[in-house]
Image (cartoon, rainbow over all chains, first blue to last red; front, side):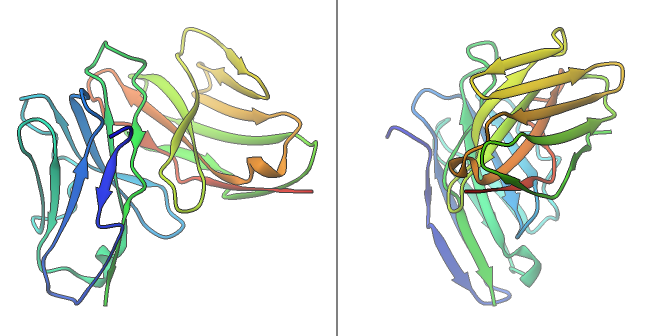
Length: 116
Length: 112
């Protein structure tokens, strides 16, 4: 596709359930990022994938959060045993390989997660 | 430290006025300072960016001013328009880490 695609756009779940959020980056982009945006807050870094390198997981808030990237393309963010404080918009972004562009991140429209 | 501090949290400007948003940082390893614009329901999009070897960059009505010694940078929107109403985020990236660190955002409202 032309841009970063995220699904679902909206997800309502009950506390304690697991959720999976999907990101399809721009074709050819080797870097993929997940950020979290809570209501009225800034963007909180979660995890970064670059090619086949080990991901930078330094932003994951707890071990309930995990992410994988298959085949260097699609990524899935999984939140286990969801809590109400996990409610937020989860944004995915991609960018060309380092040195191949300006460093611009291209964001999707996000997946809005509501935990009841 | 990775933190980037942004102010004000919200800003109301009359059409035709100048909007100014400020950011400050501590990490001297930051080497790239972009500003992103976000409309409701959309993801942020790059607006303008600067590297620390220049003190100012202008693109149309948007200007970044950068003060390396003070570790501060700001976004100026000249002749602000109602279509500029959005949330603006400053960000920074250090040489050893590819992910951007974002400020907390400024919600700009330009009144007609």
